Image 1 (cartoon, rainbow, N blue to C red):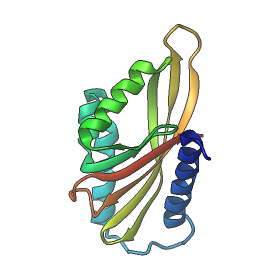
Image 2: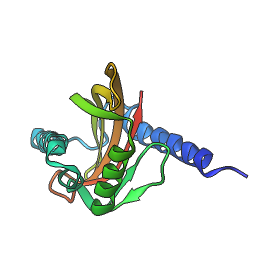
Image 3: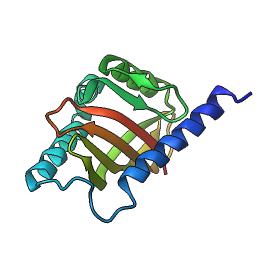
Length: 162
């Protein structure tokens, strides 16, 4: 019998493969976005990532009401309030403080008129709470969003350290 953590890693790896299959291979998008579509999604994610200093509730507000966060080595978290609460618990339990230094867009793909897949990389430093030298990190994010930026927020988001 497979343990929950092994099953979770398998499901997480499968999810990354599925989203990567949607976003990586083809040279052209399945749905040709307009410049305004691309600008709208770029602005949405800029506001989303920029909301982090305002707290986890502000960040979670960018998810759809029934959106999911798929954190590494943990059960899926569904809904804005649950996402904000999970992020607060994760920060409290962490042995380090995370200091983001920038987000780069790796790929934005309009898979169809009602689905945008967005891959990005967050870079920064993790500073041990007990003291010590900061450790650089990179965390890859894959998220899907129904429609464009005004269509309800992030439906699913998954992150993993590189």
